[in-house]
Structure formats: C-alpha cells, structure tokens
Image 1 (spheres, rainbow, N blue to C red):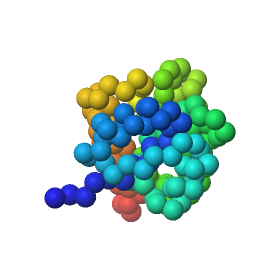
Image 2 (tube, helix red, strand yellow; image 1 turned 90 degrees about the vertical axis):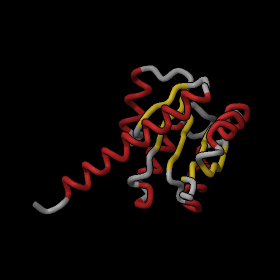
Image 3 (cartoon, rainbow, N blue to C red; image 1 turned 90 degrees about the horizontal axis):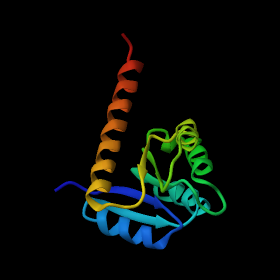
Image 4 (cartoon, rainbow, N blue to C red; image 1 turned 120 degrees about the vertical axis):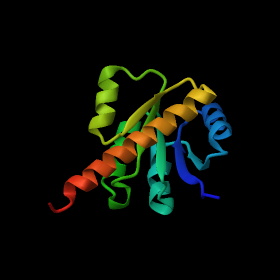
Amino acid sequence: MSEKLHLLLVDDDSFIAQLVTLVLAADFDIRHVEDGYQALASVVAHQPDVVLLDMVMPGLSGVEVCREMRKLPALKHTPIIFFSGNPDESERRSGFDAGGDAFIAKPVVPGTLRAQLSQALQDVARRLAAEVTADLPH
C-alpha cells in the first residue's frame, strides 16, 4: 500500500475547501489553510508534496504566495497548481511567471478535478525528469 501524497490546499472559500477535501481525501492527505500567510507558515512546517493554490485571496494573492514559496529551497520542485474561478490569460501568465506549474479551473467537478490534478502532477514529473536529465554530465 502506497502512502498518500501530502497536499496543501490554500483557499479562503470554506465550501470549496470542503468539497475539494471530500473529492481528494481518498488519494491525498490534505491540509487546508485559508490565506497566503498561513500557507507560507504551513509549507515551512510541513513541506507538502503538492500545493493547490487559489489565485485570489485576501492579503497575499496566490501569485505572491507562489513567488515566496519558490524562494524556499525545499519547495524548488514541489508542484504548485493554481486553482481559479476565472483565470484570464494575463492571470495565467502571472502565475507561470511566479513559478506555478499548472492551472485547474473552478468550479469543482469531482471527476474532472481528480483527472486534472493527476494530469498536472504527471506533467510536472515529466518536466522535472527532463530537467534532471539535462543537468547530468554528458
């Protein structure tokens, strides 16, 4: 039996957080925080395997949180997946520029969320494997 991945869910909407937790609890050990400051404290204390990060929150935005997370060496390769109700092209670009790896659109559709998260994690794993291979001596 394989151990569940640790997912940090950062979303200020408690209904969304409950729904995401319900949908993903069988596959992930989920820690939920409601804002960017709590997210930064949580990643330092718990070093999640993946971060599902809302784009728009009070205080620090998802983009600001992502930028700060990418400054931490322990999170250099941790997948950060943005979660947004309406990511326009400039918002998506800002997210990728900040170090985000993928986007998943809200509203939460259970089967779609699982599939999108799985696909995003596979894409990140392939990218990281390619980066490691490129760094190997020839």
